[in-house]
Length: 247
Length: 390
Ligand SMILES: Nc1ncnc2c1ncn2[C@@H]1O[C@H](COP(=O)(O)OP(=O)(O)OP(=O)(O)O)[C@@H](O)[C@H]1O
Ligand SMILES: [Mg+2]
Image (spheres, rainbow over the protein chains, first blue to last red):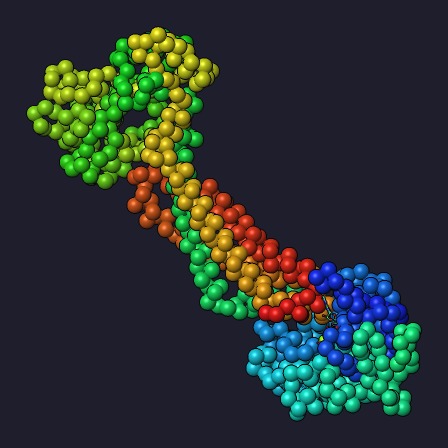
């Protein structure tokens, strides 16, 4: 698999939801920059916009204003179908729990994103099995999600996220539903994707121990982004809190 | 593009539910085919009726007879080629359960009027020349095991013999109505003169006069034109008449038995609506259950049309399988159905006229049930789909 070359830039991004006629500002003029190949954890209270941020970066949601740039693509320039195609080539998603298709086997789940590529059946098989081996699930290829434990399911989901070799992995509370040991396995795996394959990883988590695995921890609160005291060379370049609001 | 495995496995996700829905579709479409076949059979006599024949009846009612003298007067109208008396006899063979139609007619004119009727046994000459003779349709002949030369006793209900005996008829021919759509293969035709004689001799009672006159038009004359002429001829009595194209006349009988096509159509409509709602319910439930799958597919980069076809294909397969089975069952039961209902519904068939609407309806049901969840799947964003509590 190739070295990832995808950095992530958010420039003056605002996102507001209206609920019951009332506007809820999730982000207001936020900037964020993540270097290519960084492993970045995001923390923050419930409702602080962590999932929204991942959705913006993954092209599942669009900002009201501002730019989202992933790699060298400005997402706002893509229409819906181009965006879907871009997603299939550049982004791997891992959601919290239950995001495998229940009627498909582990192998078939991992093969799903590869169906959108021009790969032949034999090539798809090679890639999918390789991804399953990588997450240590090679021997469970024929199992359905219902026959797997939560941790195993999540590892298959990671295999699916990396099957088409995207530059960016977006993980929304990937360990949220898991016991300690399974969570550790999943985190180890994400760490290896980062160190061995050079993927850019954005991971939302509530667990400080999980966040420790990352090189860089971003805190979201009330529409602002704050940085943790950073370890040296943590992939951090710049964080610009909103004017007039202290960090 | 959507993986076929995914369509198939999602369809079978709840086997019992899908099986029950497919089963209902099977029953419904089997029933629809049979009902439609009945309607087509009834319509046949109307649609295929000769454009060259009129039926002249009393303007008051079909049950009021016309004077015998009218026949000669009708024949003076320009465009009338031939006329024939037809009087409903209303009798049965041995037991009231063996009821079938008998008409007293002008025996020497029937061959001209119904030129498509063919004798498969016996001869027209024998029929014309023997006063007590009759023609019997092949199905009735089969049913009672009659053949040419047999003497058959018939009890008359409208024209009972006063000494309590039965009427006797000698079979001179057995006919096949063939292309003559307004006639079935069940009826008996005998000499009106024979009936007339018995009445004059005081051997029977019953209404005087003639039930209806069947009128054959000369080439180049229209039913409407000649019909109006005949009607105006008797405008000033003694009894007014009504001339009707044979097709309309036949349609009248269909409506006399309680407007069967309407009745059957209503039942069919009810069955259709019920099955429509049942299938829609199944597909909406499936659609809800697959919301998360749709979210995942879209997050992976599948587009709206993949999500759309994922759901719509399931509806098409479900309806194709369920309705298809019903249609095949109907085809399979065609023979037994003809045996049981053939005498009331001549020409009963599961043919193209039955199959085409059934197939079109099946596709409509599939689209109706599949479009709602399919459009929803296409419209859903990843965020909505993954948020949805299932
Ligand atoms: N589709 C939506 N419609 C309306 N409001 C929304 C929508 N998505 C998010 N929000 C609101 O935006 C805010 C941020 O939501 P988001 O899901 O990003 O939070 P989060 O940080 O991921 O929270 P959690 O830790 O609970 O997952 C919340 O107040 C939420 O209610
Ligand atoms: Mg969240």
